[in-house]
Length: 367
Image (tube, rainbow, N blue to C red):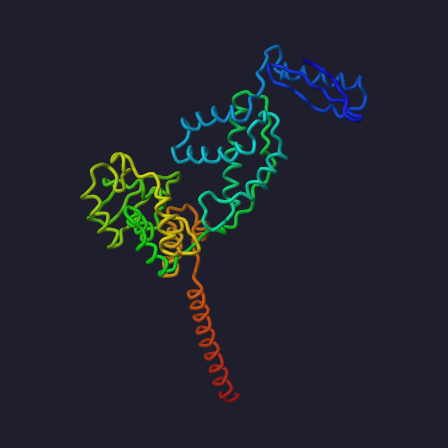
C-alpha cells in the first residue's frame, strides 16, 4: 500500500514496508515536494545507508526487550539482571507498541515525568516513586539502546542529552533506639537475625543474605565478605558479641553453605525478606515506613555519633570514597545539640582565658 494524502495544508505519506506501516507527515504543502520526500523516506528505510545490503527495520520495543534481557542474563550478575528486569516492567508500560526507532528524547522526558507520579510498589504511606528509581530505569533504557546500536540496528539512542534527575537522598531513614526495639520485637525469624547483623555491622542486606559459613571466623571474630563490584566492598568486618553468638548458632545449625539459606534449598542463599519486613514495620506500629537498607544507614549514623572516624567507617561500609560515607551519616537532633554545646563550652573557655590574659597584661607596669 502506498498513498499520499492531505491533512489541512500539509501532505502525509502512508505506506507499508516489511510488514510495517509507515505513516508520517512530510511537513510540506507542495505535492511534488511531498512526493519526493516520500520516495526519499522509503529509500532510506530500504537501504539504511548500507550500500546494497539491506538492513532489517528495528522491531517494536517489547520485542527487542526480550533480546536485551536475554543478553543481560548472560552478561550481568544476577542482582544486576534482576534490576534490569524490574526497570523494564516500568519502561514497557510507557513504550509498549512503539517501534524502536520511533522513541524520541521527548518521549523519554515524558516517561520521567509520568514515572514520578506513580506510587511506590507496595508502599503503605502513599509515597511516590523517587528520582533515584527513575534514574535507574533511564540507565536501563540507555543500555538497551546502546545494545541495539552495537547489534547493527538503525536507531539513535534517545537518552543522549536527557538529563538525569537530581537525587537528594530524601528517603534515607535512621531508626531511633525505640523504633529498633519495637521492630525487632515484631520481626520473626530469620528477619530478626538478619536485621541484627545489619544494625551491628553495617553490611548491605544482600551481603548478609549471602553470608557463607566458611567465611565466618569465630576465633578472630570477623566476617569475610568476598562479594562486591569494588575491591573496597570485599572486606573483613569485626563481629559484635551479639552477632558472634547468633552467627555461631546459625553456623552450628546450618545444613548447607549459607547462614541464611533459601527455605526451599539449603544450598542457595535467601532471596528476599521484603514482605516479612513490611509486615514487621506495620506490627511494630512505626508510622514513618523504612526500608531494610535503612538499618545500614542507622549503623553508619550511630558509628559516626559514637566517635568512629570517617576513614575507619568507610572501610567498614565498603566504600572507596569518604564522600560516599558522608551520605550515610545522619546526626540526630540530640547529637547536634551536644555538638553545639561543646562548641559553646570551648568558646566560653577561650574567651575567659583571653580576658584573663588581657587583665594581667594591664597590670604590668610600663617600662
